[in-house]
Amino acid sequence: EAQVTQNPRYLITVTGKKLTVTCSQNMNHEYMSWYRQDPGLGLRQIYYSMNVEVTDKGDVPEGYKVSRKEKRNFPLILESPSPNQTSLYFCASSPTPTLGQVTYEQYFGPGTRLTVT
Amino acid sequence: SQQGEEDPQALSIQEGENATMNCSYKTSINNLQWYRQNSGRGLVHLILIRSNEREKHSGRLRVTLDTSKKSSSLLITASRAADTASYFCAPSGNTPLVFGKGTRLSVIA
Image (cartoon, rainbow over all chains, first blue to last red; front, side, top):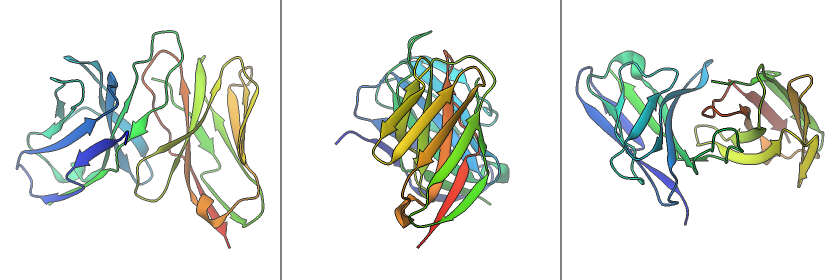
């Protein structure tokens, strides 16, 4: 089954304790992205990756890191989490949009609910 | 990045009625996509309309696009309780897809 998986689905942690949220897709998509969703703010893009070893900042990258060593995986790293990073996080993937051409639909993971105390 | 703005923010209707939500954007696009999100879950792609199309149908969904007004609408006909969700538009050019705050639709049985 074609899907995007995220782990863990729920996480409660303390300020400053490094954590990683994994994201994996089995559709051979080049493009992957991370979003956070907060009440009243909608979805905001954190980082995206057009292909292996290529990553770019989204709208809210501060406090996050990503890596793209393999096409299927795109982990989100919080080196020193803070309470303002408490949020619902989504990973998504799609075939790479060609500049000036049609953007393909994105496939979303089930979400990771993170609480930082 | 391009972002759509959905309107209204919230909409409550009776089962069987039609629901219309709108999306406005500011820059030129190649296409516009609509997504649905059930509470706390990942977004699900509903429909994509290209910039050279004016209307598109998929089941009970009808999407229109007016590039001169930089706006789109999503119509859900004969709504069901299961249509209760948030709906997001995503106008797309040659930059990464971004999402607005969505329209929260409640369909009352």
